[in-house]
Length: 266
Image (cartoon, rainbow, N blue to C red):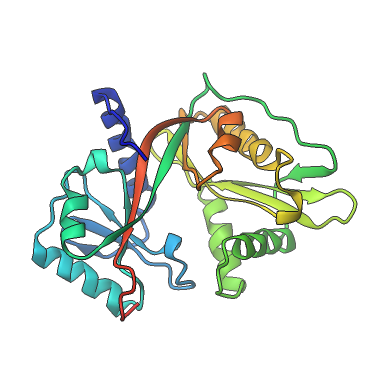
C-alpha cells in the first residue's frame, strides 16, 4: 500500500485522534512504560483489546522497548502496538529494529457532520439499541464469534460492554425479522474531546453484503453528531472501507498495527 502524503492539517488531525485514544483510557489506571500506555484487558487475550499506545513523538530507547516487551510477557500477552505513524514518525523503525513486524496498515477513516450520509435499514432486518441484558449478551457473543475471540462470553464481558454504554458510548444491533436472530452489531466508544471511535462493527456471515454495516454505522454517527460531537473515526478492516464510505466516511490517514509475532512468552 503506498504511503499517504500527509499535509500539516492531516498531521494535526492524527495527533488529535491519538489524544482522544489516550483520553478515552483515563480512569482505567493503565500501566505506563517509558513513552507508552499499555491497554490490558484481563477478561480476554484478544489482540485488538491488548496493545500499547505511544505518546506523540515517541522515540523509545532499546531499554524502553525491552521493558515494554517484558510488561506484555508478564501479563501473558503478545507485545503489540497500534498507532498513527504521523504522530510518532520515529517509532516504527525503532520497533522493527527490535524485532517487531507490521501486522497491517489499515485505512483510518473519519466522518463529520458535513460528510455523513443517511443509510436506511435494509429490508428483512430491524435495528435498535441493546436495552436489556439478554440483547447485550447476544451482541457481545456475535462480536466474539465474528472476531474469532476464543474467550467465552461471561458476566464480566457483558459488564464491560455495559460500562462503555454507561460512560456515554452507544450501540446498535440488527435482528433478522423472520428468525429474530441477532445478525449485526456496532458501537461507538465513550466520547472525549468532541470525538468518538466506531468499534465492534460485525455482521453475521449469512447477512453480509446487504448494507447492514453501513446502516448501523450511519445510525451511530448521526446519534453522535446529534449529541454534539464533531468527529467519528474508525479503522477499516481489509475490504470493509467501501461500507464505511457509503455511510460518509473518508480515508484521512493510515493506522499501523505492529507486534512481536511468535513471541514465545505470548
